[in-house]
Length: 463
Ligand code: NAI
Ligand code: CS2
View (cartoon, rainbow, N blue to C red):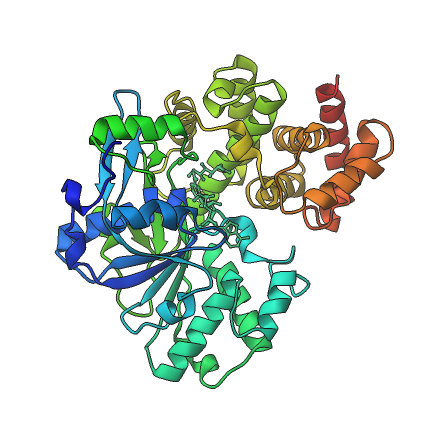
């Protein structure tokens, strides 16, 4: 039996985990956090010598990650897969693993904690289509009446209320999810929940809280057994918590904090007053193209993004989406060349070592499409142009959900019902899915140009 990664295996880490105290809480202890923010936090601590930025990581829905890391003293590795041989780095910045709701509110209320970061997936925010809190969400309804919140927004508000009671000081809540204006989204949801569940001092606590936006980028596929085997070979011991990532990483953070934070810029993060240009480029150029390749690739039988982008027709369609539909809607940060950026995105997608599954990128389309594709559609229609390539990506999603055996999506039942009730033919299916109001607001549902583009593409895809 191979020895497990732990303090006893004396791995070399950038910081000494035994010296770290907890100063951060992360909600959504998934693969991406471990390959991105936790890495930046560790490298920043190594650069500054600060020992107060240990992370309390919170899993929201399962004990898996805690079960993986607890026997390893919280240690895990990042298996970096680029064009050469894979490399592995052990990360020590996660010093506590919680499983919600146990201990979460108490840790958020800890006066030593000054920042909460989140990667709880787009669906974890329980927002309604207009961006407000979905008060019809079962979890939200329960939490408004419960002393033990199980939703992310409920946990955050309970933590803020506890800080108000104990005078634990101001808090920064930093979303690291792929959402447009993720800081403003989170701020609105937290405020609306707090207004519906007031408590003494909470309003003042909220006034002192900050909700900076951030753009995050690193391709982190779900870990496989083959990844664990490679990590074991490179580490010389077993790491059940290994995460896989490409070499590229980027983090652009709005410089708006309520109190102290790790010196993430010392690890290469960019602190700026305006994240929006960075975020718009990334969500519309990278994530939209990712979705196009995921749906068209899956429909053509490709299991991975790398296989899909090596298909000449799909490569062309990805390039056309970026250059013809997306670029005209962008106002990029100074000195960011969009042609070079687009080429780099396709090169990253083509990395054969990552084995990023089309099915993983294709999941949760009902919450991803509005974020990464429908803004481009709206902007091009408003400019009097036909968003042919963005419409192709949406049509491919429609074909995908109407032919998939199982739909991995928070709206799976609603989508299945729409598909089942659709009138015959491409136009019938387009109308049925355009009628899913959580995805398509009335302006797009009723747009004849968009509907015609979708119908033409869907007819082609259905041949
Ligand atoms: P993951 O599946 O490894 O982790 C997802 C985390 O979100 C888990 O901790 C899970 O408990 C939590 N979660 C899921 N549904 C939830 C819900 N309804 N309420 C509360 N918590 C919920 O996924 P991964 O790879 O860590 O990605 C998470 C998010 O990070 C993505 O959705 C995206 O927003 C962002 N991201 C991911 C990248 C990647 O390549 N994986 C890259 C850039 C951003
Ligand atoms: C992907 C993203 O799963 C998906 O939807 O498009 O997780 C993508 O890998 C990241 O945003 C890259 O930074």
